[in-house]
Image (cartoon, rainbow, N blue to C red; front, top):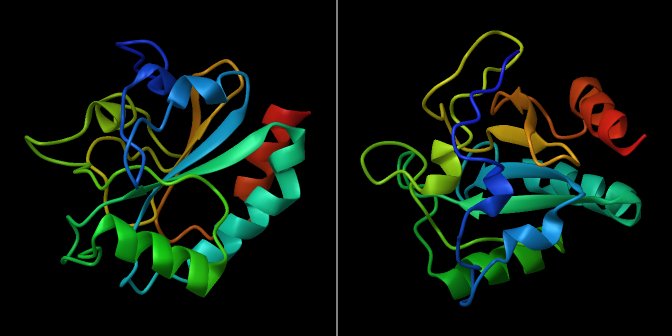
Length: 168
């Protein structure tokens, strides 16, 4: 896997927090960060549970999940910021940070995803995000170190091994 690092770390990107203000991505410098485009009404939405378990298991070791709501895939994230926050909290007990809702593909692609999509996953896929819950692992050095398909469960062996390699 190779990274196409055109503009520095994805964590240098400005993006809003879900409920206003800045998500302050530079605060995650030196941590391992799993960036995931999320949606509340998708068949993969139960992955929130696994993402929260990763957050609880590794947060004290310098890790965080960063959820990025997106409504580009069959309109599966139609809610307002407040509705998304309430759903994530009430349904899955989400404690990890969530950004504002953004586009991950197309002309309106957010700059955060401009910095991510050039990285290929283990099967060689790079470019456009395929569906909700595509995952990118940022290493402690701020560079993309892994990309996982939407169907890859958060607690799968390959995701856990990649996270632990960054924390070890």
